[in-house]
Length: 237
Image (tube, rainbow, N blue to C red; front, side, top):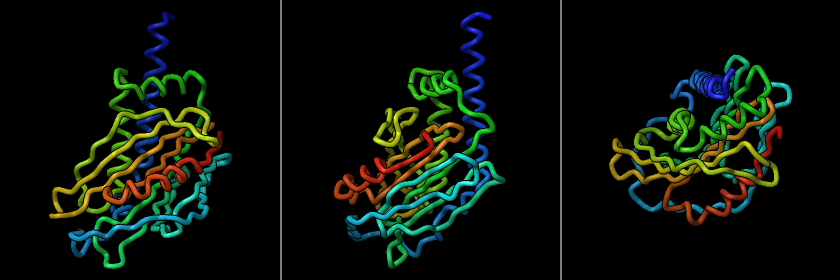
């Protein structure tokens, strides 16, 4: 078989992996991860700065899968769900006491399980699809956009993503990307915008998704904390 034929087969396999895992994650309805419809959007300054962290482990059902991280103590589990043994997901929220929207911040984490271990050639092809000039880029970024949009607060319908950047830390050596994003609402008048980041990382047989968002005006004061949270991520690598 020619090299071109091999590349096409690998690309098809990568698209299948990404689309299959997106479909698994999408089996959780949007309403499962949305906050209740708010009383009123923020119209005043609800600044909040995080300091203390504690540990959190996603309860995974797949042998060998592991997702652990540190988080601000204020963020509490809003709900954890599993989808037919194919994925496990959790949403943690720090809600405003007056139930206005958006929440101060939120963390969403998910583990989506593959039926087979990721081969070096598959991981290489996935890495290529994270580049804007690759034919698989729209699928790679589209998967991230869907994950984020389904976990944003009610009414936040305008989402802008940056180009994914390679991510690594003391716990994650390779096969991971970080994407920054902003979100605003065209439905809620005067609602504050959000800023956040998402990490997509590949373990031995699991795709991990991790997202954090914060009220945009609070992001600069909390950026160092979010960097600590991201650096604390541990998966099966």
